Image 1 (tube, rainbow, N blue to C red):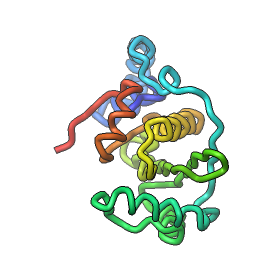
Image 2: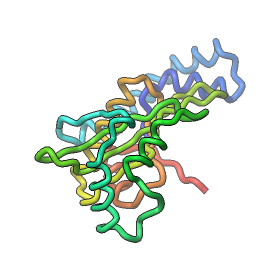
Image 3: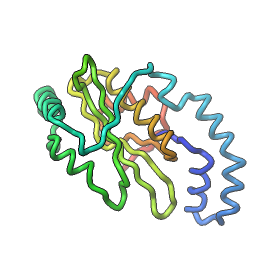
Length: 193
């Protein structure tokens, strides 16, 4: 995960631990410059490792037949990685619905020579208990497995998370090849049991 708004995140976190709101804001204001400095010194972002490219953000209802073709390519190249169907209709249904935790989903596409090469879906969720808003990568499909495509999709989703005011950007539960690309941007890591 990457911390995007240190002061606000620290304040919400301290409140979640039971610290009074006013006191947590003071502590967060004092400590956040140190956290920002650590983030900057260790280059914990995607800007330091990725070149600039144009990418598109689309709404779930605008998914089309290209996504069915992309999914077919992915299933042929990765027959043992298939967990669920990702046809355009399933993606529209899954990413178009609102639920209690994910308020909305951003879908980013990567094209080369006007052909769809991959997509990433990132869900935005806000904790009702702490108020922490996180942007979490919920789906990433790149049939070729090319690092450049994965890197650019992650970079674009990270930039959107920063712009939209999320406190955290998370990448959890993907294959080793995807995690390896994410590790190039020097994230904080946490083991899940």
